[in-house]
Image (tube, rainbow, N blue to C red):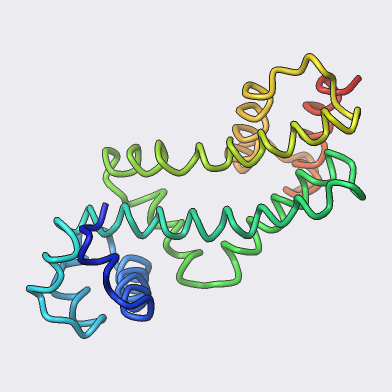
Length: 199
């Protein structure tokens, strides 16, 4: 995590450093990104970097933490639909928001691809360990609301239900598609899972 000096910076300067890191990491192999290239992009002195972060890995991990928090905020807007949507539709809406977030910005889309294919496994594991639980926690809140509505079983194990849905969503790209439409396949898979959660 960044040092306190980073959080004491004005928000605009913090964002510039993160944006500069995103540009570097989304356009180059992880091993080719250097602190020199990051500070050149951000237009800050190299010495300042070490006042904010321990090393490149520290910045990279925080960058994903920042992106994960932003994405979670966007996903939490689905709570506004709980009264008017079925649980399955609410989950699909979350996935649509997630895909839109990742595809609307070329840097984020490239960053995700490079993270999956080029990031050292140890760092990848640390990031996933920190970020995936954010999805679990949000889903748990939403599942609780649908249990209270009576759409889902009162005896539903909410923690495990959240884990199952998150695992399905994360791994859907590895599923053997029958019609080539990943969104329709995902809806079918989610419906199968949700049927087991219903009264």
